[in-house]
Image 1 (tube, protein in one colour):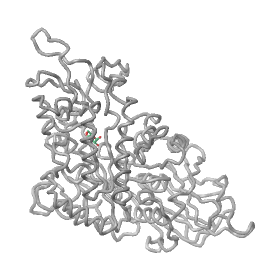
Image 2: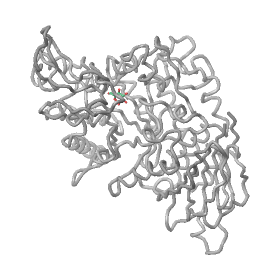
Image 3: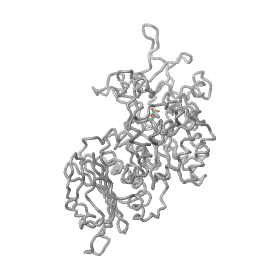
Image 4: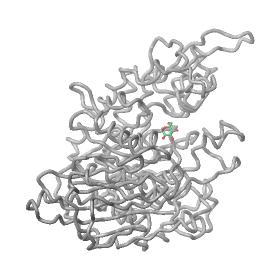
Length: 600
Ligand code: GLC
């Protein structure tokens, strides 16, 4: 791979007018999802920990992100790597202790970084004391979970599950508990019994847990798995989906009309939002509530709120993960972006995410020749940008052998099929340097919990830090734009296509002298010279006064003709410019251009 960048990013910040904004903090920044097991190990046990995040806080500041989103660090037997929580108010010893957490909150706030927690309301661990007491039918816990009698007994006198419901992880969603003599529901792993949201006591417990962490200083939550919160109380069989790609014990083989997206669940989320608002008023701090919902666009929008009820500040937008792939045409990409924008309720706040702990990394989905183009889009589209650790240095998925597989989804699939299901490849340790264990653990440490990617000698932060042409440097430039430019924070969005392969979007403020932004993405394997004169704010052309580029043919001070803009194969260009519309009618447009490109 060959990367050449024209100009240095330090100067870049100088050309940006600092935005004077009174927007909430989460509207002007990038949130960085930390996967704590894989970020930095300070106690040489091979697993990342809270103090590992603390020692790296200045990294986030220099990267220009404004907040951390932490995958769960609560007490857990780790059957689903922390998403199975056995005490919602305790820190798991793997990550440290309560004092370490307090230190993290304090040190974040000292640096003006926000701390947002992943929160898993749908289920607890089967080792949670609530579940243990529920098995024993000890009140008030008897109905904290979803218990049902067997449908009947089979010919060998074994209990038959109450209905055909399937777990997202495959197989029956029901597990028989001998002691209680009933089945419990688990929509995810068998070690994750579903909490019973038709029991008001459960809802109150969860609200109190939110209050607990807010009192400890956290700045918000992302609630995951929310479409599964409620189940139909008639417990009828679900119909078949008739989707032939799924075998009968796979979750996709049923149509989930009784276990997912139930109308009743949204008011629970609105109730959680009430807690956020109540604590925001009490604590005098701006707080954030996000939800992660794998749902149709129509259902996803309901999380923003309905009628007179306010919901999450936003549901996570997964469209660039689920719909955007290699081979997507410019028209389809435009549609993917436009559909979210036009589906949102009036005045709702958008967001974009391109990777997560459940999906292959962006560099592996698209290839490293195009990942920067995707990062650029996610950072400059309207709304909050959420980045998954490692995207800023272009980390790729890591091949993991069966022997080293840890993710229950992979383990349950067996040695033949585990690679199809395991999420381990996108969860490997952060590549800090080319030192032993990529600088994730000390050399004398135990082996990291997952293998380090073999490419760490080449792909690591230390190698990129002082290189103005690196993915890291480009990422920094983008966070600076997001932080400093009103057009990026609140500017309008217009999207265009030129042919099958060129996608263009502009961000601009009406009646403002601030620079506009235009992003041009070339989805083609070949260089393209495109006519962009259709883009209203570019019609009059301009002069390049500033330039960052990878293999770019442009230089600062050069005229830019809107009729023939050259975009290298799989490249992405970012132009900053002052619109001619804001100058005297015939005055030459002054363009400030930033070109960021990557080529094989
Ligand atoms: C969330 C997590 C995922 C986990 C699931 C079950 O979706 O991202 O890793 O397995 O919740 O709790």
